[in-house]
Amino acid sequence: MVREAGKSTAARGGRGEAIATPAALLAAPGYVARRLYQSYVALWTRMVDPVLTGPQFAVLTAVDNHPGVDQGSLASSVALDRSTMADIVRRLEDNGLIVRHTALHDGRRKLLHLTEEGARRLDEVNRRARALDEQLLEGYSPAERDRVLREMTALAARWEGLMGDE
Image (tube, rainbow, N blue to C red; front, side, top):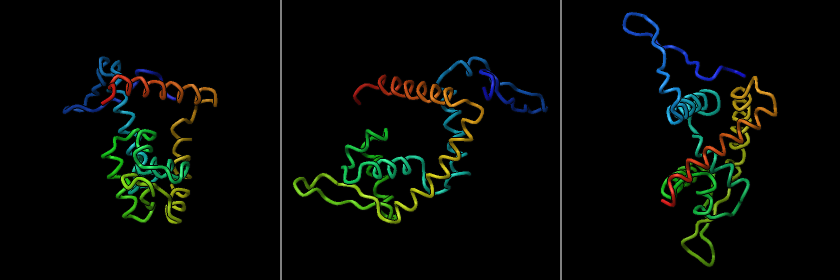
């Protein structure tokens, strides 16, 4: 394992003494999830792309996998609400990475496609994202990586399920 569970880097107090993270926080899944997320976003910005966000990357990846899908259907597949999805799609379109076409038989549906620049940018960013993934899971065997990702995915699904149909 990379790091023992419950171990945390201590901060320094006003007099220079080590201040450990309280055990109650380390036992709180939400606190640990927030720490993971904060670290991930900082690493993403430093190592993958300082401009393209993780959610934007997720949308580009999903559009690449499902060209011509409508943005409403795609939103749930990348765990975004419809309004956030609309904002992200607008930004990606403004940056020339995707195009939206109105569906022939339903003017409300916007069908998404990558542009050539979008495909090029996705390929470039994807290489760096996979390198970050390798660093994040360094020290884990392939079986341990699969297990960790399965558990994280199950936990995400469980927490999303607790929100109900909002």
